[in-house]
Image (cartoon, rainbow over all chains, first blue to last red; front, top):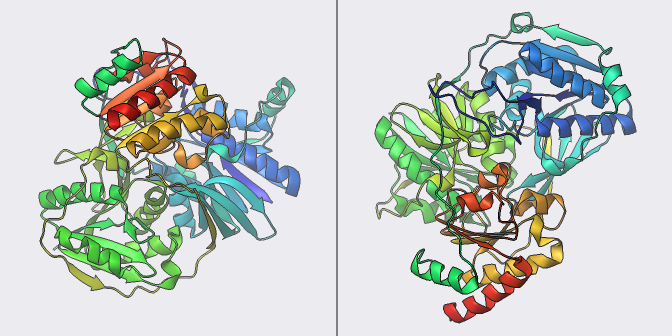
Length: 248
Length: 319
């Protein structure tokens, strides 16, 4: 079983972001980066499937030169080799999906595992777009995956409960939070990761034009809520709900 | 004449409220673009749903029925939506946000070569607005393609009301393709309570609940209002409550009249899913919890004492 897993470099979700005053984007000067948490889950699941079914795990990242840090992280988790499609500047989900389509056509994996969304742009699109471009099946928001010879049985976290579907392989799975707990790479694995193969492409080599379909015009701070009113006890809370908020 | 096409999400024969919220946006958008407003209902037998939507006075309700369309699979529904979009010359195809729309609509966008906007909250006459970074950035987006596909954040729009005018209904025959995915089973979350995206009151529990058995407290409070139960990611990850209840960046987006956060610290990922609620109440024993910064009213207290007291007092108030 050959599995391709994605690793996107994102701003640390636990850090507070600041928007540049001119509205051109996020101020990245004092921010740290890490692997998109959903992608970490996708890599973990790929490794688990390899451990039980054999095969190879390839991690792929699309982005600036710095994105190699996150690809190396995927390698230190245990992936066998990495692919970096080096790009500059803004990409929408569609450009990323078209790049990945080309990588998948080159690599011919049996399964592609992606995080269901990146925690920076919160788009939740790439897995679905990729599935359509490849004309493959998709199983998005997975919380459980069982692989047989030619199919995957996937439990999906959907509004209203858990939906179970069966998908022919090759296919696309996007990972939700409850799929697994990603491992932490041990120090020797981090050292080993630096010696693993990392192949670098650029979009023209893959035949992909970088025309985005969606362009960011401006970024602003959303309106802030003015909270902070405190009450000392339950009777005061009830009084407030009745008289101030008028919700009871 | 071009169209704005809104796909209806329905369950157990009923249209989701979030679809009616999205309809408010679709109406405004169709008017700005001088386009026809069309609804699309897909399913096994959905004529009753079409009838229930007839009084909303849209220009056309398209129906596509087939037994293979009973479950909303991205491959089949995506195909049908794209085909109907071509037939009615759609310049905008939307569906309310939620796992159904998010699963389907990017596939529709790829089929039509269209730009896709996730969870839009506004249109300023030229550009679309949505949020990124767990609601910490509001982003203005230009679509560079002739067709736009979008999911529409229901909490950003009021629920559409019937206009009294009749809508036309047209049954379309769209052949359904073979697929590489098959529906096996839906394990429904059993609940007699409304869905958190549709309830007037949502009471959520977090890490401070300390265990699944204590969600009884949340339920007792919720039931006084006929409301819905929610949860933070911490509570869902701990296995205390099912994923379907998670409110936040990667869960549900809710905007009830009253949101009560119990034992929830208020991580930005949680705030992203509830900050548009009308009134937010927070009960937490940690006075430094970030939830108090967004809550309209906060009470620093031990929830295991406070919530039962609140339930008893409210029982008298609401009598």
